[in-house]
Every structure is written in C-alpha cells, then in structure tokens.
Amino acid sequence: MNDVLIMGGGFAGLAAATQLAAAGRRVTVLEKRPVLGGRAYSYTDQATGDVIDNGQHAMMGCYTETFGFLERIGAADKLAVQTSLRVDMLDPTRGAGAISCPPLPNPFHMAAGVLGYRLLPVADRVRVLAGGLRLLMMKRRGDTRLAALTVDGALDLLGQSPAARRAFWHPIAIATLNEDPAIASADLLATVMVRAFFAGKDAARFVLAKVGLSELYTDDARRFIEARGGRIETKAHVVGVGFRGDEVSHFELRDGRRLTASAYVSAVPPQGLFPLLPIAVRRSVPALGGIEGLTSSPIVSVHVWFDRPLLAGRPFVGFIGTGTHWAFNRDVIGGRRDRDGGYLSFVISGARAIVDDDNEAIVARTLADVHRLVPESAAAVVRHTQVVKEKFATMAPTVAAARLRPATVTPFDNFVLAGDWTDTGLPATIESAVMSGHRAADVVTARLAALGSRGRETRAAS
Image (cartoon, rainbow, N blue to C red; front, side):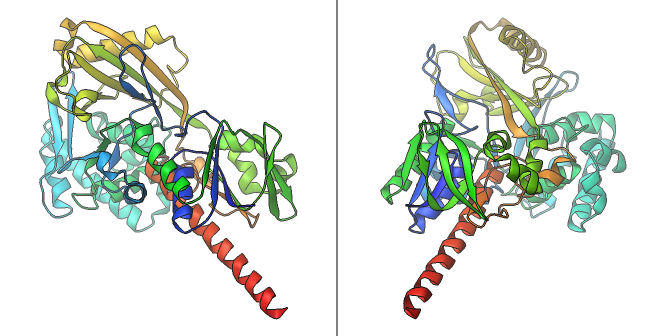
C-alpha cells in the first residue's frame, strides 16, 4: 500500500508530494494528462522551436512558499528576480511611465514609486497613496466591509478617481486577481497589497521564470520524488473517489485499477474533483458540495513573432486602456538577445468576453492594441502567431467565492484538499497553489504520525 496517493500533478500536487517525500513518505502522484504541470505548463511550438507557456505566470518576491518549493527541488536558479520593483506602463494618451520603487524602508519605497508615477496627475498620485494606506489599515484591522465589497466598491469607498483606477488600480487588480474589478473581491486585493506592495521592497519585486513553466519545476520535482522511492504516473485518470464510513477507501482509475493508501490528497481544480464525488457525499458534506458553485476566470495568451525586437529591451510592459493587459518580452526574459526578430507574449486576463472567439479575431484585436501603444510595431512584419486559451485558468475571485472555498481538511480523516482554489486566503496564484500543497502535506504528515503512534501502542500492549 502507498503511504499517500495524490491526484493532480500541478504546482499544488507536486509541492505536497515533494514535501512528503522529503519527510520519508512513499508518495504516488496520479496525473491524467500525458505531462505534469496542471494549469501551469509549457510546450514547444513546432513552427519556431520556442517553448510556449500556457499563460505568462509572473511571481513576486513575497512568494515564500513557492521559493521554498523550488529550493527543495533545486530549481531556484531558473528564476529572474528584479533588484527592486519596476513596472513599465504604456498609455495611449500620456505615453510611457513606470512605477519604480527605490531601495527605501517600508513603506517609503512604495510611496516614492507611486509619487513618481508620471501617468497620473500629481493629485491622483496622492489619492492613490492615501487610498493604498487606508486599504492596508482596513485589512490589518479586520474591517468586515472588505469581505462584502468588490474592488470597484472599495475604490468608491476610498475616493479613487476614474484616472487612478484606469492607470493604477485596475491594472494591479486584473494582473493579480485575473478578474474584472467590478466583480473581483476587494478583500483579496487588500491581501495582495499587504503581502506584496506594503511588506518591504523585496516582497514587491517581480519574479519571472527564465525557462518554460514545465522546465521550471516538473522535471526536477519528478526526479526529487522518484529519488526518494515515490512514483509519478501520467495518463493515470482518476474517475472516482471511493468512500467507506468516515474515510476514503480508494481512488478508481479509468483503466480499472483501484489504488489504496493510508492518506489521499486531491490536488485538482474544483471542476475536476466535483464529478468524482459520490452524490451522497456532495449532499451530506456542504464543504464539498459547495465547490460546484466556484466558477472560473479564463486567460488568453497571444504569442507573436515579429521580424524585429520591440519594447526597447524591457522584459514586460503593462498596457493601459486596451483589451490586452500585458506584454512580455520572451527574448529578454529568457536571455536570448541575439535572435533574428522578436518574440512577445501578450496576456488578456479575465477573458470571458473573447475566450470563445476565433483565434484570427483575437490576434487582430491584440495587434491593434499593440500598434496603438507601440507605434513602431506597425512597421514590423508578423512572422508567426499562436493563441493559447486557458478557460479554467483560475478560480473567479468573486465576493461569493470566499464563502465556498473549502479548507484543507475535510470531514474524512484520510482525505485532504490542495489547490489554488482552496481557502488559502490568497488569490488563485502559484503561491496559493504551493501553499495549499504544503498545508496538505502537513495535515497528512500529522495523520500518518498519529497512525504510527497508535500502531506502536497497540503492539506494545499486546
């Protein structure tokens, strides 16, 4: 029998598996797809040979759980970390600007960055800074209003102008929450502000992977697990979770196998877990039955290969006032400065309105945005494009979702949950996924230790 069966081979599942393997537990990871990575993976574009991420996943200096996971598996050197926070932005009317924070003590670094942000009038910069500090205080004091407010509702309360929303608040909210500020949770935005932007200069830095997402963590995690006696099975599709009394009895696979373990971890998205649960469990356990109400927010990425470099060597740039939100310079991020041409990746977050559109229409709209904000791109020749749609990219971080996110533990003693959508207190990010995996591993470790202790007591008594 396995010590632990883990369903799902993304960040959450592999974080749980590596922590358990490091503690000497025999783990088996079951991933239904042919490759590991879950909703954060990469693949090779056949036309160019470049590695494409299914969506650009930016991290921040406050991602302590993620860095711990990558250190554990020996992958931390695959990251590029800003020396200090700098976010370049492009506005169609005011031109280029940047939020650039000098190396000052907290919160003066952020104050200097906001006050120097030329894409806002001076009066709005002061309002943004005052609003951010007030939001920080509301979060730290546990202001109950945050739980009921959307981002836009909170910005109303904080007296933020349309210009401040357009050039500062909305880009931050969309980037970190992957949702329309009209429906996204203000409480989660406040969490981001506390953990990232007002927690010191190191916490606010952006962190990008120099390699494709799959190369960043999946191969190293596999080697780490297998070197400690664990197993990774791909194309291992769990089709049912069996229950007996107050415990899970087995995972049932499509190939007919029933695998058993001392403990079970589900590290798949809610739409993947819910159909596997027996109807009786859904009805009798509100925490599990309620996950059907969690909805998803999509991300669309548009990858474009031009005949020349663009973005003036900047690794990434935020777009203001367009449907396209961010541009990432894959050549600069990956250290490929001698390329004949330029490879850019454009991100549209919270992309419900376009995710079902034809790829050609999405590319045309994206290029129109690029030409508007990067005029020199109009003379560039587009050599190749690729559109990637991740319809279930993240849990939609609505006000209602906070009440539906389940805890790590369940009413079943040997069954725990992991995933960025569980109740980590964070938006559905890589950090949330890894944190959830570590929490699941902690719960399982305590359970297995208790089982071992009871077994020793029984043997001693006999």
